[in-house]
Image 1 (cartoon, helix red, strand yellow):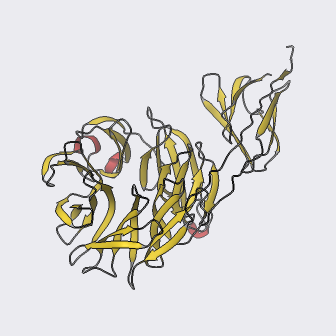
Image 2 (cartoon, helix red, strand yellow):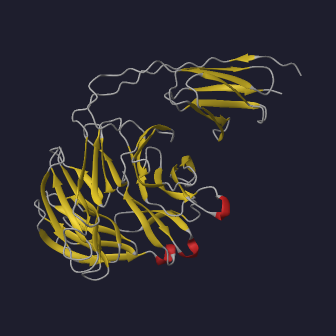
Image 3 (cartoon, helix red, strand yellow):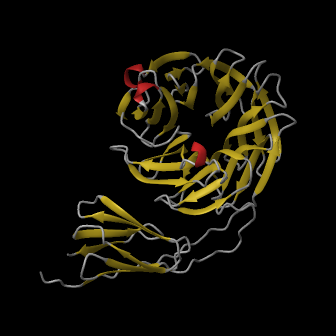
Length: 440
């Protein structure tokens, strides 16, 4: 067979501009002599923050639900504490149309289940409701409220009374809803785990009806800590078993992934860990630049691009539980550090100071040469985070990945693949895709 060389040149130039940050970063702890921690934070329209957590230092019982309103620099505007003589905690809130707060958490002081509270703008209680354990709640257009709990779906009226409920035993058996999150089409994505059903991924509409479910969903996690709609599908994060150590000692690694909306298959996935440390991820959110931010342990913040490749990481100590991107492009993180509720406000790069200058990165470029024989040679330059690319066959199926740690270098690929047409797409700063041909 006559073999002809094929030369294909792919070039991409990207200038990445890092915007100036408006506010300096800060790091604060709040609490007393006992254990206090935060679980949720939300930026308000004026740049201030509302924080939800639990306190053992300041309440009347074992733990109490703790609501804090903070000024833009982290100074306390006011706090409110809710609870009884037993264990109570807060996990999520929403700002309602009347500028009050819809709060939920858990209670053992007033029953045993999810505790939903509605307050005014100063945190004073208007009504409360105890349901089975909940994971998500929001206000509905009719002035009522929607709650997705471990055991099912609830609709409440404006006074907090249950007007409709639905369980999912017919779909998940005795499994319980582990995570839930709204989607851009007005529905909700949920995961269920337990029983013989393993872990399931499902979507429900605003009446609680199941739109679809992936009963064979395999996230490869011990449990899912957080689930959210991503840029391409659905993203989640949690702990997975790391490699077994000597004497059969096991440990956890952090794992995050994005799955498609058709089959629940991985679009990308990452695992981070080092023996014998225990790592975990608690929250993952999409960011405005098309990437993702993870709050985890020990990396308080881990920034990824849209294909799951890490861009930067910062450790501030403590254990973060929730992260959100703020209006200035930075991040606000809440968790626990040294027995206190812990909050970190950063700029867009995870730093605690102001980045005044605009930074222009050097141009990114790569070149692919397909020669005679079942190999191609790829060279790249100016990739400070290393070079990463995906390989697709002629049907569009991803068949391989290329990873190189250096900022510049040469890679040989194709020796283990069959002859045919392939496409290479860099995921390190360029969306350019190119065709190469492997021949015998």
